Image (tube, rainbow, N blue to C red; front, side, top):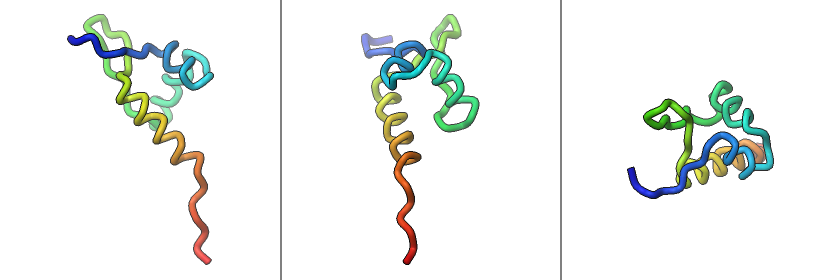
Length: 68
């Protein structure tokens, strides 16, 4: 494995101003795909994953344009 940044649940929660359990809740709700797992089974996300999560949450926050 390389030296790429890894975000644990606590890191991901802090990145978004949330708790460490928040990323696991997002997974259970199907809002984000399941995290990667290291050899010990611990969850982690890469910087690219975090950017994709950011885009996903932004899309969910932005209302659909109304058909007029």
